[in-house]
Image 1 (tube, rainbow, N blue to C red):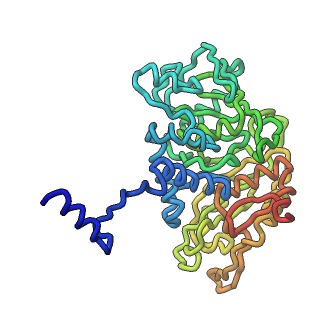
Image 2 (image 1 turned 180 degrees about the vertical axis):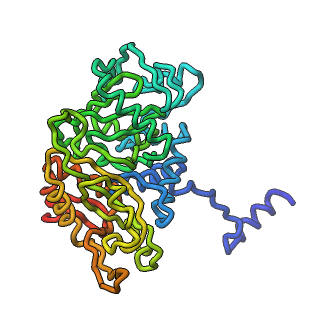
Length: 389
């Protein structure tokens, strides 16, 4: 076919079948899609004040959790998202090419000693400086005060009296609690005055590491690192409600505030998620609950001790009553019949997540409880000013 005839055929294409348009670029590049997907994670944190958790009952949250974990494993994508990482979720993730890079990536300097796990106690008198945004790390001069606590926590973890639990939000950081960061156990000995910066509470901490060092990092800096590579330590034995500092033979032990979980087989009780009993006793908690299956207060069923706080120099009955009022709207309302056929309505069981109950207790001790209230629908403690507005 000669050229003139081919041109004539093209000119005679009334339907435009031969007019092929080049394919345009997609409306969104892969980088744009990556940023948009990461934005959904930021939106979740702004709304819920915590990172997404592996919640099997919430498909959307579990999807965001999986996406975040995947991004934390992909250093290339983490680099692209650096300027959009407003909560420090991907901070410190960089390409590791050598053993030197491993130690350079150790912001807290907790690899400076030879501790191989949280069950190996090693003390290094070497002073190391941490990045400015985290604070300074130095040898702990009064480590002998804290070492027994850390050793006891280690022992409790070994025998199951304490458990490691995912770190979910900044509100879980309080004085007197333990955390595991990059495999190293730490104790929050002090929490300084709280200040609001960027709409978030922040405070200078005193953190004691099991390797004999301490750091004065900021609360939000610790939270950012725990999000990346940390766990919280739950207590499953008696704890001092006002911490160990200052407790001596002159102090008066006044009893225990405890949190229990029901082991009832009743369908209407098992149907409640996050159902806990908040109670008080003067004797050991184990003695108080040993006949739970015959006591309507305990729903006529065995119970598991979740945590217990030893109280000194305070009125634990009033503390118990205050917590009951705080969660009162979400009190369990079921009938329980005892062995004699008498009807009872226990009033010490509440539907609230364990970490929220612990947070409320610390707010009571600090005196800040009057500024907050429990929102059972959102399953979180919120400021009263937020409700008023």
